[in-house]
Amino acid sequence: MEDRPAAPDQLFETWRATDEISFNLLRLIPLVSATGIGVVAQVGLPVPMSVFVSAFAAVLTFALYQWERRNIATCNTLRDRLVGAGLVPRPRKPTLLGREIGKTEAEHVVYVTTIVAWSILPGFVARHDGTGWSSLAIGYAVAVGVTLAAACTWLAVGKKPAGA
Image (cartoon, rainbow, N blue to C red; front, side, top):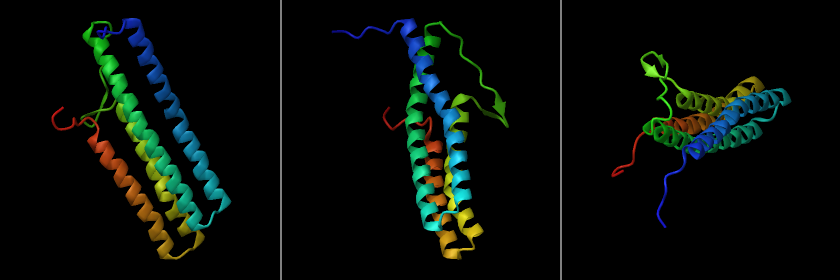
């Protein structure tokens, strides 16, 4: 059985559905995270528990970010096929300080900022709690680890694997 190209309507529908998922996540991730951070700050969790909650939330956000990168690649592929078929024009991205900033870049900023916010929370809890520097160091060690993982992923966006 040979592969037939997808019909334009099917491409548009898949593109729209994938974009809708992305936009829903873009709305929910910061809202849920800001609410969660506010609750953790208000409840006054002990530092070890705040490290656990923050690490869990940061890793969960990181996992959603990785899944979202797949959605971004799917959207880009669908858009490129539609542009190549002459069905839609290639959209122009606005620039900021010489760098193009479109939906893809905005998603990266939202996810990385959310991961960083969750990651530094234990440090603020320890500082506010009057807990010693060792607890503060643990909070920031979590922050640095998760932030570096997110940054490495962000830097790798758009790079093709060797031989691809």
